[in-house]
Amino acid sequence: MMEWMKAKVVTLFLAALALWVLANRLGWLNPPIKDDPTSPMRHFTAARWEQEVLASTKPVLVDFWAAWCPPCRSQGPIVSELAKQVSATALVGKVDVGKEGALAARYGISGIPALLVFKRGKVVKQFTGLTAASDLKRALDDAEL
Image (cartoon, rainbow, N blue to C red):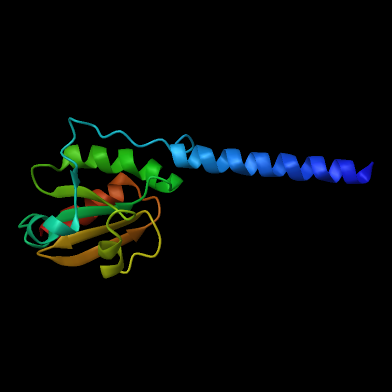
């Protein structure tokens, strides 16, 4: 009787594991975040990093994130709203660490979300973890001076 129960538990576990793997592969557990078409949010890549971030005359806020990261998913709307508020005085954008791992490594990103403020191509402020819009806005305002 005990062997039969062990076999059922193992079978049930393996079935649950297979379903979990399949759901991850199909994106059911982490649906993609839809971009707001009205947002001035940029999506930075290594190919355009020099022109868009390092050569910018405006302060730049960069959100290093990943779709599978729950705090990143919470930070996204905060950063998107901030992008709308500061579009005249600063640039705001995101870097998907899954697609742009070299950029994340270049800046020593070891935890996400990581938010870096650049001024004239140099990092002047860095935040790790879920960060309030007021703190990010203050950092951008300080970088303008």
